[in-house]
Length: 483
Image 1 (tube, rainbow, N blue to C red):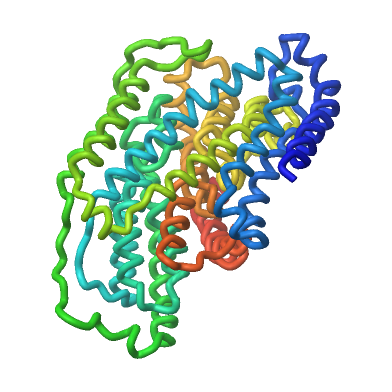
Image 2: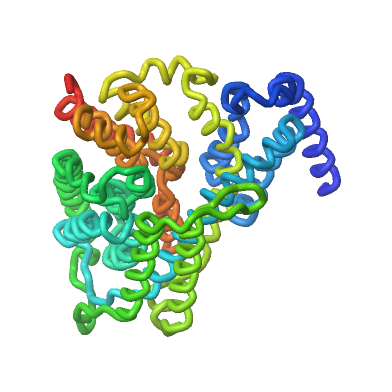
């Protein structure tokens, strides 16, 4: 059976290669055309395939998916990579190395470090998941996400939230709103909060400029917190009497263990800031230029994670229901996503010369930037999506101007466009499980603890579309219409 499957995948790859190579080889040989301008739109099919696998396999073949999701991810990655390499050869090798060296490896190192360090902080206490307490948890997470990152805030608080609601029958909505607020929207006020904003900081946006989007963030967060409190209050009245009673036995007072991990968390944040403020030159890695300070940052992050593992007692992690599976799942799935996302990002970078020229040309007003940046960030990596439309705005209003001057001019004269791009990239990461990496990690941790989370499409149809989209429409009307 295994031999047949291997032969089938081999011949399928050859078929895809035979279709892809003739349509793109001429452009590759020319050497002058940009990759994104020559790639057809259907080259993103493997990317769509891996998204559909994430959405469908857990529903129709849950046991298979649980044990083989890494192989499925690798399969889609190879289905794209093999014909891509055959068609573009050296250029394809460079693109693949670039996305893994510049994007994927630092991305996973940061997630692993935050996941490891936050997992060593145990918040004890006899919490009873009342609507009031749950709302306070969400509020605290939303407030700290901009300072410790959405991943740090999510990993710090998701387990206490799950424990507080362990006896409740209705708790899925709490995890979903946690993803909305703590894993996404709360990270919009500093470059530490979410990768797109940090990317803007690296390209000249002042560190505290993001405070300018406090009105939008407060509006969205307040609406969602009030809506959550109302919804949770309705579900609370439907709970059994036992679920609504305080925990039996002696009540455990609030206590935080593993506080020394806050030092390591500070080291992670310091390393991230260092990489944005210190310029130490570049070094070539397999032909890909990487900043030296980024290597220093990644080394520091790995050190913080290792120190956390070595200095935190196993009992703390055991009592915190800590396991490595969530970060392993993210690493395997996003390894495939980053590979198959190459053509989508290349086409976006090509702008009006690529297969999405019509879409790029239609983005004119702040409302357009908000929705297109946000819509694409729901499924693509929101950092390069942010950068694509950030550069689009700079090129549209200040063509030929040096970047640092163009950024200050954009802030001074067309600030509403930067606000639209920034909020769209951060807020709409909450629209899907893959919109932001903490979303998937929160889902995985919740499922490990027995919470039956909705499927990929179920999350969208039951929660993000009916709840978030109306809120984003309101934000558009208030802040971006006629801007």
